[in-house]
Length: 388
Image 1 (cartoon, rainbow, N blue to C red):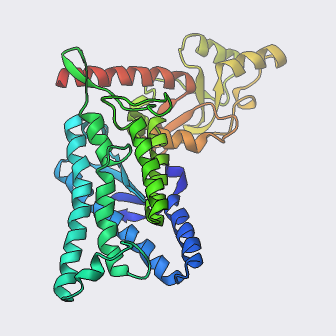
Image 2: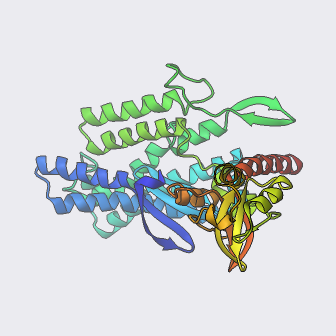
């Protein structure tokens, strides 16, 4: 999801991004509007009013998150609402609790409907006798922007009350469904893959039913006709599929920092060490890759396998002749996910040195990463059990 978005700024430490769906929506609206004879300027204004409605909704949710003590890292704006990512593991875990999900799920629709009603009241108070214009048909069109501004907010709130993932109503039904009892705690069923299985889930209304609701929105929009209902239905359908695939959910790994998984007890080799000396060091170490230093400065990395292969093919020589000089460093508080994405294209990279200034304080290698992540997940499960 993030890869198809672009940043618009950072506000109070929270990164705000707009998804490319918004640009697709604008292109479709301009295309259809031109066929209907609407001016591009009015279509653009209508698009900005939808963006404004989404921003109003997400500002209300962000304020609620701050009230509940959930530290936000970013907000991704979509035509149907927004997605939050959280800055800490604790905030992520608290936001995933059923009670918290229900609270956050009702705030968005209430904020949207409340904003629409407030705007309608302001317009009526400012221009008496405009009542008929505000309830005219169609509710949303470029030629009546004041009416559209009111109904965009109200319809955004109403649509989000539908029991369809990833809408707020779908999350209310999802988190409110009872599951089996395990370890003294009630687990919750996750509503997914309902449509793929060809049927409904009685307790998981966010799955197959959500996709049927999306289809109903598209059909209703075509019959009325109402372009905005068609587009909203299409986005709900796409969002439901992505939710089923787990693409809209922030996993715990998103909040893992390099310091959480790095090896702090490690050995280094000198660039002037011989391969035989390096092999003897490797025999007595569990490391699979060693940082190579020269005078305290990091200059490369060499793996145990590289040392063995070089000795077998070329005989004894120096570490500097076989070490890999291609590597990228990280800071202790860097995101593990972002760091791994950054180095994926780095050919020959065998480890990620974690630096504080010029000093190596830890290393991350492919071998230790899987082990560290497993132990970290186990530690978190134990912590949750103790806190329950």
